[in-house]
Every structure is written in C-alpha cells, then in structure tokens.
Amino acid sequence: MSVAKPDIREISIEALEEFFIQHNAPKFRAIQVQEWLWKHRKINFNEMSNLSKADRNLLSEHFTINSLKILKKEISVDGTIKFLFFVDENRFIEGVIIPQLNRLTACISSQVGCSLSCTFCATGKLKLYKNLTSGEIYDQVFLLNDYALKHFNKPISNIVYMGMGEPFLNIKNVLKSIDLITSPNGLGMSGKRITVSTVGITKIIKKIADINPNFNLAISLHSANDIKRSEIMEINKTNNLIQLAEALLYFYKKTKIKPTYEYVLLGGINDSIDDAKALVDFCKKIPSKVNLIEYNKIKDGLYEKSSTEATNLFIRFLEKHNILVKLRRSRGEDIAAACGQLAIQNK
Ligand code: SAH
Image (cartoon, rainbow, N blue to C red; front, side, top):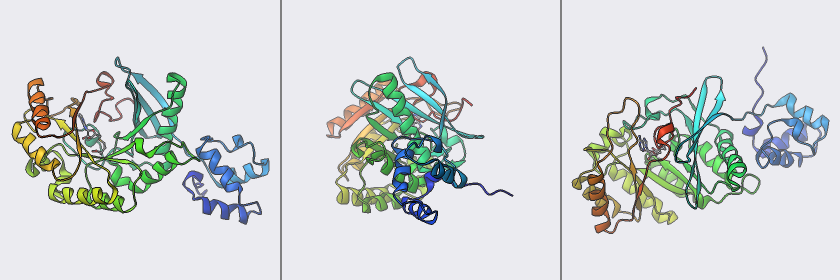
C-alpha cells in the first residue's frame, strides 16, 4: 500500500531544513523552497529553477504540493466577480472580488461548509466538510490578487474573511494564512487591510487579544437582545452577549483595535427601534463601529430584507446616539455572490 506523500506547504521551515540536512543538502535550500512556494506560488517542483535537478527530484519523491484551482468565475452586473475554487474531487469553495471606488476587496473562505447554522445564512445550511489549510486560504488571496493585477492593473487592497465558514473555528490555519499574506516572503500585504469576521467565539477572541493581532476584527452581532440573537444564531446559547461584551472589552484593552459590529437587517425581526436601542446600549460598552448589512435573500430563506423606511429609522436612531454607522449595500446579488449567499451552488 502506498502512503500519501505529505503536502510540503504544511511543513514548517525548521522541518524542511532538517529534511535537507538529512539528505546531505545545505539547509538554506529550505528558504529557497519556501520562496518558490509562497512568494511565487509555484505548484510544481520542476519550476524551482535555482534548485538542482537532483534536489527537485528529491522533493518530488517525498512531497506533493496541494493547491487550489479556479474552476469558474461569474461577473455580476455591478462588477462583483465570484470565483469557484476546486479544493478536491468533492469539495469546492467560493471567493469574491468586490471592486469599489478606491478599493478592490477580496472576500475569502476559511472552511468548506460551516458547522454553525445561522438561520439567515446560505453556508449555514451546509454541513462542515473540512477546515481549509493555511495554504488553501492563502491561495485564494494569491489567485484573486493575480486576477486583479491582470484585469484591474492593481493589486487587491483589502481582504475580508467573510466567505464560507467560521474563521475562529479554524483559527490555527487562519492565523498562519495571515502570516503568509503579510510576510515579505509571501504577499507582503498590510495586516491593517485584513478583517476577520466571526460569530464571536469568546474564548478565541481573548486568545487572539493575547497574541497581539495584526488584523481587524468584525463581529457578526445581528441582535443585541439575547433571546433574539439565540434564535437566529445558535452560538449565542453558549457565547451570550454578556460574555461577548466581556471578551471584546478584554480585546480592546489589550489591542486598542475597535471591533466592527455587523448587523444584517431582517425585516420585522431585528429592525425595530427597540432593537436599535439595544444595539446602542451594546455599542456603548466598547469603542466600536457598526456596519448595517442589507439582507440578501437566500434559497428557501425565512426572511425578507428590512423596508427602506425601517432601515432609515434604524440608521437615524443610531446616528442620533453618536454611533459610527455605515450601510453596506448588497453587491453581486444576481450571481449569488453577496454576503451569506456563498453555498457551492455552481458545481
Ligand atoms: N462566519 C463568519 C464569517 C462568514 S459570514 C461570521 O459569521 O462572521 C460574513 C458576514 O455575512 C457575516 O456578518 C454574516 O452574518 C453575513 N451574512 C450571512 N448571511 C447573510 C445574508 N443572507 N445576507 C446578508 N449578510 C449575510
């Protein structure tokens, strides 16, 4: 029986150095290989042209290089582009490029499917198939950046972990992917332009605070009322608003990073003035800002988006109470690329 070769992209630099030493090759080969793997994203040992043929053969005898491939893309009337990535025979994920006036944002996935089941989210209707590796998360950014350079003549400016999956339930690989994206030996992008979005797993929020994160934090709040939040987001039953506020306060005190609260306006569910009051109270606990998100209708969805009138009243109430608030209009709806619509429908 043949044993599957390990993925070289999952091997630490120290282990790779050790590998070369054991095979009577200089240890600095490991750094050369890392550069090929990340900076140039070569997915074939034969392309590593400063290694000898013998070294290239040695590597391909012992390792494979796993990578994502773009399978297809769709372009929305508003310019948003959705990409379907091939992970393996049975698994696919989606990523999106959102062109705006001064930004080119890449929205990427952290898991195939999701173990959570937020009632308004299309990915939440799937089960969790797999955590993406750090390389697979990195690949999405690299490939979208490559596309941006070719088609927009500029690189991706912002990265949001707001595609499929819950980043905080795959935190090790997510953190490693951010290291690769920000490293000069990877894409060298600024962590200030990276935002990780989470349902708010309090234990991980505190853990991240302790490691001095170099990225922004967005919390999917969607209600500042515990009963309502538990109805739409099951995670609230084990990570409630008091625990969330406590973890975020700890996070803010340690990092001075202001979290952004994401709040999808669901018609008749969380868009009343009472809901806005609860949100204002929650916002006063920690320096923060609010992104209101238009609800994108999903297949077999239970909800409608908020009326224009309710939305405007909600925004005005927040502004009157000095909350920093922005309304995020839906993008890419016609190709099911909008927030929460990513669900592998296009196999
Ligand atoms: N699991 C993470 C990241 C993925 S979701 C999280 O929950 O934060 C990214 C954002 O899209 C979240 O704020 C999520 O609540 C929102 N979202 C999900 N479904 C949506 C929908 N149908 N319409 C609008 N926003 C949605």
